[in-house]
Length: 340
Image (cartoon, rainbow, N blue to C red):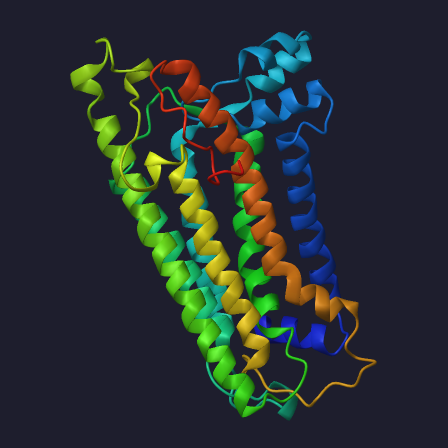
């Protein structure tokens, strides 16, 4: 099937190498641009542009960004927005795309020895958890979260979101299956099982806490009709979130997302130690080229990209909270306690 063939091609130095190059380049570009904006390594005008593209919901373009939009073209670009409720599209697409890969990762019964199935494999488990994540987020968008009718996000953020969920499933497949370097030993299988359990528990914890965070934020938004226009109600009915990680982190729901992706990356790292989604003969040293090792790192490159992207959004949200609420707790970090 497609997923097996892609990973097998990487192992055998085939056309799957192109997928490794494209996916690793994508995550590297996302990470580089995010960290450059996060740590102010870009010219101020470019950082303002990134802030405009990242703005959504309660984060309209900042005053600095608006001040730097002097030309008519820049103003038109700023106004290229879509409804914030289109965030739901990410999880519809992500769920369908993950399900497609999950279906295609099953083994066909009469294939040659290089593609014989030795079990459902780590990639199936990782993809199943990712599908569970996108389905949960879809359910939250439909029945938990509230999108203000006037809230928007930039079209660039919308396109990036679709590309993100297009890249993640094949990245997890390559990271899980294409890094198998030989026939596993019994000791390696035990170690891999432990890593799978640890990664799965970390994912479950991050996913559960993110759901808690989204429920807390939704509860705050539901108070809008009771407090909007009153002192303490905040701008447009927003309130200071409390409870759980929110006592220490402004964007605890982003932190939880980082945690769950770390769990998936750990599970991907465990797969090369155990039975993969297919079995192969031990590879010669000539076959274990840099594409194979790059494939092993792709899930972790995705994690770095997630941290950078969410880190920038978290910083902007953190600054918004401080501007909007004079009483906002000063001990809170944006995304990572004591670091960001």
